Image (cartoon, rainbow, N blue to C red):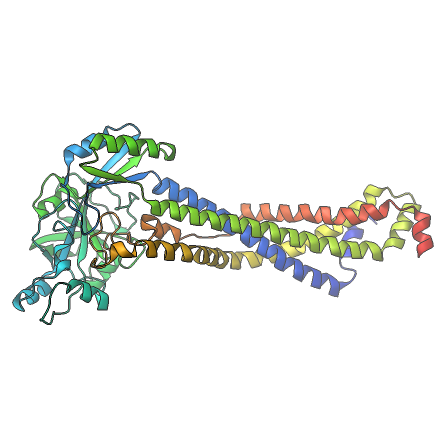
Length: 489
């Protein structure tokens, strides 16, 4: 009988024990593979974060951060200056507007209401930084997000002695000079097309999926802003309900609506590589001047990447621990099997079997058990890896989110839900208001899929520890002289 046939037969000599060993191995190997899959998924997400938003700088008017800021608006000339800075590959200007439902605004005016702070869209009029026109823009659209208790309380702040009518939240409209969102990432258009030439005025618009659904709009439907009719050219998905309560227009269109041609609310500057970000940031600040512009690289991204890095490390340590556990299980079971078969080993030695043949027999038997455990473990990993990755990310980012939110709580006090925060307010598409800013959507969208390559790599590691676990006891026993083994029996 060949060594292979004898090894396979020995693996099933005691079927109950084999089933128990395979079950235990399946759990350990499944956990190891799931952790490996999670590790690979998180690593890929870190690369995606760095590639998509890690090279993006945001330029706001100096002193224009938040509701208390001032400063002068940015201009097209400053955008040209920014584009000439070394290592800068793209500059996209934005113009932010706040839209109020026309019917609601008329009712509030008739009731004697002033529209509340939310009607002006934050400091400087429409869109916060940059001092957009102070007049409220009206639209036929109805906001997709209810104001709720906090929204109504914030919008009614500063008024006393009167009962304020219930208001909906304003809708964010952002004019952009290219097909990117306010975090610098490519717009995720789910239906329809983009706006074509973003450097020209247009009556086409992109709507968030939530806003479109609220107003029963589809591709080709129309709505109005300040009595001007616009056509829905496409729908985008920002990843959050609040982020989808928004619209995109071309930059000249938004500037014309605000009555401030040539002015920008902010600029999204993309650097050619992650290594040049710090250098470009310094050069950009020097070129624009500290008294004219604030250049920022979101710490929120660093927090997100750091958090994902912690998850990656934890998953790798857990993979090693689970792999070690599987190896220990195989070692213990092979020690037991070798001790049971000392007489068999003695006979093989007596008839001239070399140590490598004896070792190979037990290694093949261990590999049979490992293969069965790996097959079951791969099935477990395919179902469990996604949940494990989500749990690791959720657990690891909860404390980071709490700390980040607490740290900026005082600065947010009195702000109307953060709606007008430049480059980070809750009203911006993509849900930029969270502690992770533009990275929050990516941070929570890690997809762990058990790819064949990752599973194969994990199983190869399992086979490696199985070989070690089988060889150690087999070779130690094989070194004993046959007469000693047989006399002991």
